[in-house]
Length: 373
Image (tube, rainbow, N blue to C red; front, side, top):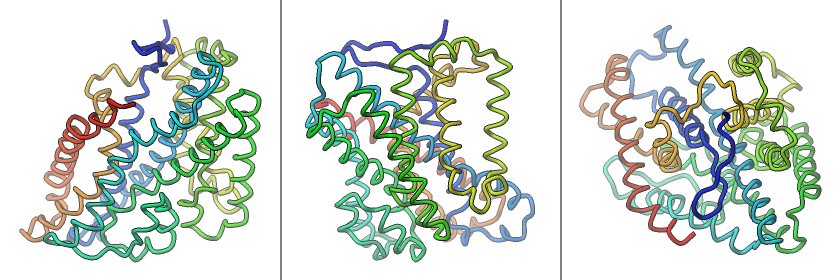
């Protein structure tokens, strides 16, 4: 039998294997940043062929954010459809409340640390960012403006949270004003979002930072997740995924990961316009295959530690660059700055510290607010 949708004690849908996907998405971003940030700490990296070769692969870890967006669109939309089916309507204020209790505590904890605590600490400095943008969930716009001047980088991860909050504020307004949770209306809304995103990318193709960080450029990922949620909720695509053979599943994975590895070649020039859209459908395939397929090669939640990692993935993602910054500074101060130090000490130590920090945050900080959802 496939791992289809189940329901918890509060009659809310629960999808097996999505916790695991969250963890892998966060881990991918972690690995990407480990190999790309604070490189000035490590002596000889620029001349080491093996390190440069590995860096080309780990750079694809930035796509973990794309997977986060698709996952978010899928889960939020499915939950809204369930609420509409159960109660006949969606409470927009409760929708905002749930988002606030889940997202705001960690987000503003990082903002508080970055702007008010960090300048007072050893290795601390004044940030180049503007606090007002972060308070208004516009950090992605500020990242476009001043991100290249930043040598600290731990105020970068909130950019994706800002994108989601902007998107869901608009969705909440549509819910409240127009009772928008109707499968037909939602489909057309998400299609319009995708077309708007493609148009925006067409007119901003030469601006790499706008293409990567701007809400209008990346919102198609969330929309793709939303469309797949509508199709899953209506059961129209479930037989397809339930009956997929292992050969077909493996073939899609091979094709998808080949596109990821070769994306700078495949999506060169004008093809950059459709890069996020194509890859978001691949990530959507992974989500639906993991939830519904009967013949999966592997279900990610089978590894208990991966599933547990998914539970703390939000904090893991938000804190990881802070951990990297301070550990890299300490390593440099004590002379641990060789390639071997990077591989055998820095990588495992930052991973361990970040897991512990994320666990403590989830257990004693985030869960306090989640009780009120």
